[in-house]
Amino acid sequence: MTRTIKVNWDATPSEIVRKLTAQATRLETPCGNGTMVWHRWGGPVGRTPAVLLHGGWGAWTHWIKIIPALAQERTLFVADLPGMGDSADAPKPHIAEGLANIIADGVEALLPTGEPYHAVCFSFGGVMGSWMAVQHGERCRSLTFTGAAGFGDLHFVVRGITVPDPEWESDRIDAVHWQNLRLLMFANPERIDPLALHVHRQNIARGRVRTRRISLSDSLLQALPRVVSPISGIWGSADSTGGGVSDILKRRDILRTYQPDCAFDIIDGSGHWVMYETPDIYLEVLRRHLALHD
Image (cartoon, rainbow, N blue to C red):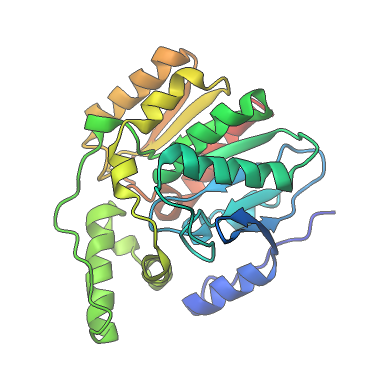
């Protein structure tokens, strides 16, 4: 029987993160001179597990709003990518294929029997997931891109992002992070709650890998011809990195160039951090995508 994951969303942000972490199993795989940290929440036996890869300057908490529900349905392996969250830095130079190899090797260690898995990848994690899928071939049963980076010239650069000085007062730092969330991650600023602010502030403070260069590259496009896993896409209609619905549809068309039956959904009124801003709708769409290849 699957253990219900209990979350009191009315608790303080730090308590929510602490309680959810306590209900996971912490796993470690090699990464540079240290380890890459994963959190596993166990789901029903017999369902294909899912590997969740977060975005740049993020951590496993990018998925915090959907983990409790999704973990009731399948086992989740949720990464802190190399050089982010609790994971050690990766050897330099930081290139997409090198970072993805560390992640792919981690999955090999976590699922050593060759068990298939779904990859669900957000933003920068989409680049990592595409190269991981190249390495694992058909073992990666499906590859779902969520607001994925790596589309080269199609990636819209968000202006006005400010890096706060750690010497500033806490309230001033929070104000800057709130503004950055409004510009980059959310369509509706009223949805930026204390938990989102806490998660974002913690993740930025712990990020050590400069992901922007890789995100702005066409690395995902380079990987796509070699991906044999079924691919799909989920974007928020107001994704700040997408440049508008017409440009998001260009991404859909590119994906369908390689796989004409690629499922692709745009969630109306949601921004880049779509699985946080509209978690219930995102989960409904994601379940449908995963069910195509379970």
